[in-house]
Length: 98
Image (cartoon, rainbow, N blue to C red; front, side):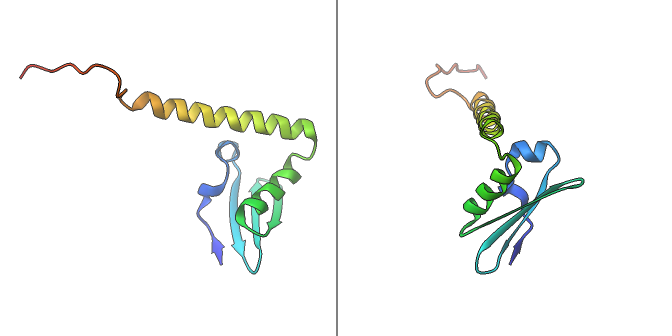
């Protein structure tokens, strides 16, 4: 089975033009690519296959730390943006005259 839905691809990688496919055939595989780059990960489930491909893309401790910081920052920014669009339930409401 091949999954062409790319929502599983980390947003930071999608922003940099990476695309991906997942495949299950007794084990899980994921393929990430961008232009001439190709990265393949294997695992017992989709999360371990993605972790494998990220370990190949960011092999050093320094590269992985930068990836973790950047992806955590993006997640925090996305959460902050989502929170700013939701009304604050603790804020007083004002009635509008009709």
